[in-house]
Image (cartoon, rainbow, N blue to C red):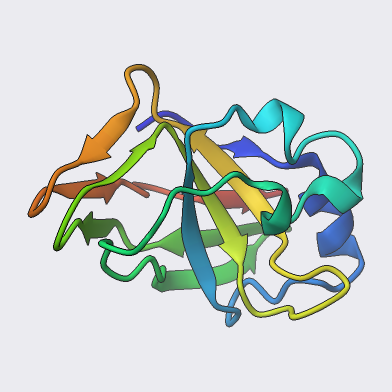
Length: 144
């Protein structure tokens, strides 16, 4: 998978104590709409409510598992376990963009977006029983 694109508003949210990346509940969101018009730009746009999501009716859990979190010599690393989702009972998608967002804050802002992967073209549609793996190999979020 390609490298993630940091959402600009994430930096302000981090500085204003919106995130506790070591313990907050992080999830994936799937979309087929280019994120540049939805969540980039001003910080108030950097929330899940501005993402055009696919229906998750047939999709297994999108919860992410934090493998490790901490800083060394002034660099903070958040490492996530790879996540495989399965479409059960029908199709899921199409989607091209894979967002990571923080589901813990319920307001000010609710569900802030951290970053997005562009899975590339063509978009993915999972058929019943098919799986999709998001590969978080290596350091996922590196702040220095």
